[in-house]
Length: 258
Ligand SMILES: *[C@@H]1O[C@H](CO)[C@@H](O)[C@H](O)[C@H]1NC(C)=O
Ligand SMILES: *[C@@H]1O[C@H](CO)[C@@H](O)[C@H](O)[C@H]1NC(C)=O
Ligand SMILES: *[C@@H]1O[C@H](CO)[C@@H](O)[C@H](O)[C@H]1NC(C)=O
Image (cartoon, rainbow, N blue to C red; front, side, top):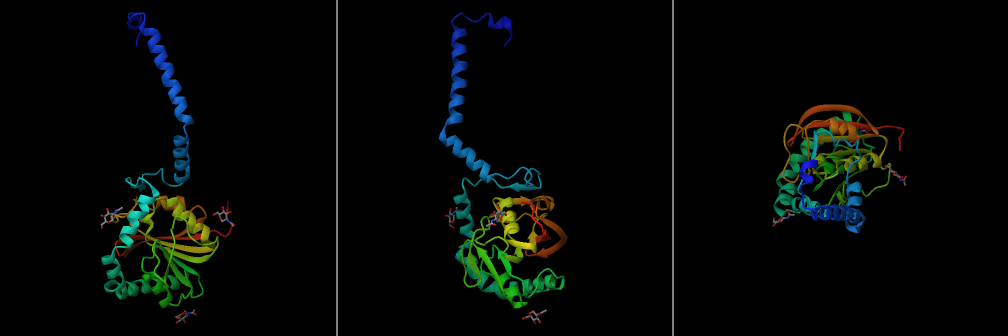
């Protein structure tokens, strides 16, 4: 507003505008003090990634539409508990998938990434096809986690907060990175539970879009390199693995920087 127009305002309007301005400032101050807002800020900072978490880059996008962590879990459970899918996973798919996975884990053994003696974890294991495949090729100390357990192969566990002590596994595998609502926690938990020198193999989709239950979209492997802070990259290769197109292999460093 330029001075000439303000001087034309009726005399009474000036104190009114001034008090309006003061009220707005006061209300804004009150809002910062409200417990609800403080709670929101706290949630935001705990759920939101550290600035160097690879999320700043446009190559990793968190899907919107999850109003809360519970809503996200409920939606994930909807897929995991779907009786038709579970039936297919445990019948028609079972032998076919285990055969493919057994071949895959055998090749990882030949590349010295996993051994018969490795303590191994499959993350987001559903009904445990990957776990069965690991055992089939001789990795006998293998287990899976998922929101819904499928004993004895799969125990209950959220990959955002793995139910294991630090330094538990020699080897971790996952093909559900796209289901992580907080990818930095997904990776942080892998690095926490891997032993120093332990290996993580991820199969991800970077050129194809994953399914409607995905919580993030990855457009290159770069964000993974940023998220795996405590590891070195061993390999990136193109694969054709049930809709996933890229395999990324990390080895946790021997010395941690915490
Ligand atoms: C879960 O699935 C049921 C029916 O299949 C649907 O009615 C419900 O809205 C779904 N819930 C979520 C959170 O997707
Ligand atoms: C690993 O286990 C498989 C299956 O039990 C066995 O055939 C193989 O000889 C073992 N390999 C080594 C190096 O012990
Ligand atoms: C486990 O590792 C995390 C870092 O990933 C660390 O903050 C925590 O203190 C460790 N816990 C124990 C019991 O060593």
